[in-house]
Length: 306
Ligand code: NAP
Image 1 (cartoon, rainbow, N blue to C red):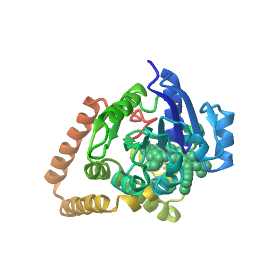
Image 2 (image 1 turned 180 degrees about the vertical axis):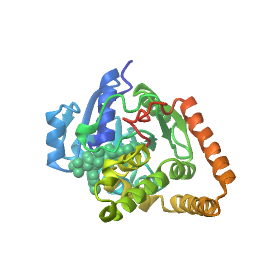
Image 3 (image 1 turned 90 degrees about the vertical axis):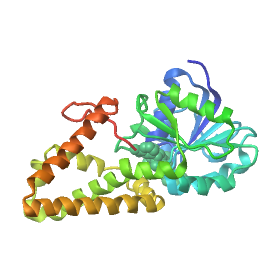
Image 4 (image 1 turned 180 degrees about the horizontal axis):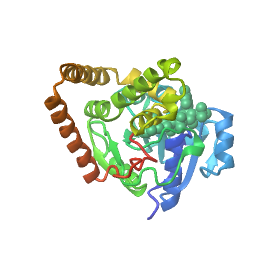
């Protein structure tokens, strides 16, 4: 594949930026990739493992002459980073991000963007529960979706170029409106994470009763919850602080359904439970048929949605 951007700057050097750097290198999609992380420790690690072509000590230095700048920091940090780099962006450059919430990132970043820069937000629906520069891998985005959320009036050429980059990194690309994105992700990712955090918290509360049994006998269901609940606390704190309305809406619906199932269990309503579980099983089959997960016993889970 040929070069899509001459110089790409990654701000933040964690799981997503690291995977982008390796995925770009795999196909030669950028002539040079620069990177910056806020702590010296992360920058040193990135240098040691040769994650990008050049690790810079400031964000300003990293974005100099970059044709594409991708903000790969927690959602709550996007605004401050955008403000810092804004005066140093190359005219005509594209700025994008990988944040898990889109409306809040747009509201935080857009006001800082100079008129001669294209801001094209995006969100790859791929991740793992690991974080940091050493957790990245080149195949993370293969056959996963990346949602691009262009603002009204965004340059079609800038959007097409970013789309080509994500496709080059292995992803399938769709475009979506920011509010719709946040609602869809509240259903598919954010609320499920909250439920996993809660379930693991409940098990932890029971620890005194069950002691090591919770771990020793943890069957697939609970083990899957613990993996999700091991996700980065900063990232997920920011997701819930910034996708508040959609998450609360879905959580409200979830609670209603949970009460309905709770009542069915109390009343011994086997038909309701059976019909409910039949419907949910069909959804699982649909996900496998769409190629978004495997039927393997461990759910084939090196990756998960982010
Ligand atoms: P990560 O591995 O924890 O890396 C985060 C990076 O951001 C690190 O380089 C960190 O620098 C930097 N950072 C943290 N707080 C910062 C702050 N206040 N100011 C400036 N830089 C800061 O995180 P990640 O998983 O790559 O996530 C990055 C973004 O991708 C997030 O917006 C997240 O919502 C989104 N995302 C994540 C997933 C997923 O599953 N993980 C999936 C899709 C999208 P130091 O190491 O120097 O602290």
